[in-house]
Image (cartoon, rainbow, N blue to C red; front, side, top):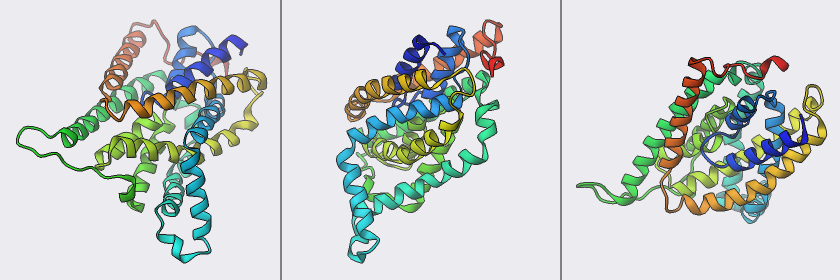
Length: 290
């Protein structure tokens, strides 16, 4: 991998990680369209550490408060009813599905799941799911014909059951094209949570999963065409760009609809099918180099 490739892929990772359009799919597609080798699941997982560092800084006050309350609750029974202490447990509970499935499906993640035809399907299907979830949320927030405005749930309403559902939604993002934020936010909206609450828990839930995945994949750097230097460079670029994107996205979702992302996902998925169907693009583009 050249330094130019790592710069572009780091930029793509930073731009797409927090948007509900799938960063792993865009890394895969960027390489395929440019005629580069597939950067692979290891490169994707490690560069996500960069964008996750942006989450740690952006939500640093929330994270410090949650960790502090969680540790105190281990010895202080009075703290166990504290919302922040409970959030600590709920992040742990919600991380279980992706931890188990990530290890179980490792071979599929590095192989069949990177087929561009599957990515096209997931882009379209999850785009439709996000669109339905967004419309339901908008109906509750603004009311509809003969309907009153319905109050949606906040993170104070988060239960173990809902945390696990969020977790299984996050685990779906092991398939490129699904999108970690897209799946968890869609799940949250369908369960009746506000956009802001669903996004905030989605980003907090991603922290242990992304850091663990990135650390696990460190051993694979340097084995293929991806070396340490370009990987580290891409991770730094992803961090810088990701921090700007997350700040914008949290403001965006408070007042705007997800429909632009829905339309983009569906159009990109259709375009992929057309390119593959006309033999303009191979569904395994770049894979032969691995």
